[in-house]
Image 1 (spheres, rainbow, N blue to C red):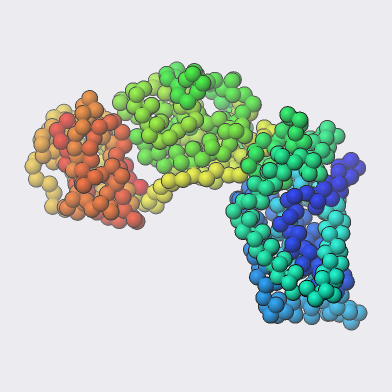
Image 2: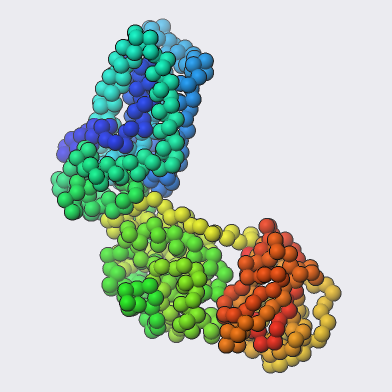
Length: 597
């Protein structure tokens, strides 16, 4: 315990001298340069209390305290901007300072020394200083803020930082006194205001993160706390507290620890987030050993397209995602999977997409390969044509995610769309538990938000058809040349001649069509043509050729050209709307499944 207390004091002092303190320095110097003689002490105490309470208390419930994702980082930007604007406008500064000056003089024995106003100013600055929190407080958070040891370590860390910050503030005060005597006080004040505003812009654009990364990588001697953080004595004591052995062994001669694997993440912020995630990981249940990949076929995006096994992946966190490339629910999850792969593959995450086919044509290797290229997937994908892996997991859904820890245990499951934040938190938690340093969160792009309430999915074949006002009837059947004048919501109707099987329906006559009344933003249909020969499908909305502004991505001049066996996007509306959709098919086109959202 004594070792950790000493380390906490030294780490706190080192943090106050490290490059990550630069954002708070202009505000600290300017705020300490005016007011009574005890004002610098009030500023430092207020700052220390705010950042300590914030990290120890709130980091347990605010996931991802890392730079760029942390709401406290946004508060820091606002605080710096406010300080800068106030200093640029002397009149505004005087009006805001007046209430604080009256507060400082409150009480029969107070002589207006600026201590109380300094506390309030320092309290605001504490939000700017929070991202500098050292890994020692990360360990503190990971246990519990209610523990006596935890609070003692936090106070020791804050005391080490406060001592150095007070010295900086007093130095800034002496500088201000000299400048004022030379008649340059307003000029210096405006200069610091501009620096604060520029600092806020730098934080907003992540320039501070890049600078700190440059310092850590190119000027290792400037990292004043690295040797302490990486020492075997300290890491051993941290292991005793957290119960998790962090990967802090120095590598490649660098003073940065191996735990800081995420090169584009501010080290202090990453460690603070790490500890929050360790607590989250402890709350995840152990659901049992993960089954191996069974009865699989072709693999994609692996070295030499060779098969993977969970035994090979032991030590990494694995996300097994059951999907199929014509499932719109699966497709809408792909932006998140791609973002997680980009963010965490280097941190210890392996995503394996298990392509479990719904339709017969999804068994084709070429079709799966085309889909992987179309969607831009770079993580491993395997075909599960015989549903061997699907059955080993007892899975019943598309999509379905099984998150496996570094010891091969299933710790989290998610079925269907949604819960993306919860799933990502589970990923980050298990990475932290495995000893990896977790960076900033993923940033999914091209996300499609589905309708809140939409027309239910229906199939054109007999096995899972619903909503059809007549049929579908197995075999070849003529449904008549006329179409219903009106349909109720969620009704579907055939026209013309169709050859209908269990899974799909093939257009036979030139007048083959499907009409439906739907309510959604988007409408999709799985289609194929014989031998991938280009055939055309006409799309109409409310009896007219669909306008370009409302057409799906696969519709051009009101026509879909069907070349491959895949999902086609027919309608794209700005909001949930009810419309009549009419689709007319060239003979030979096969329709499988309507989905909406």
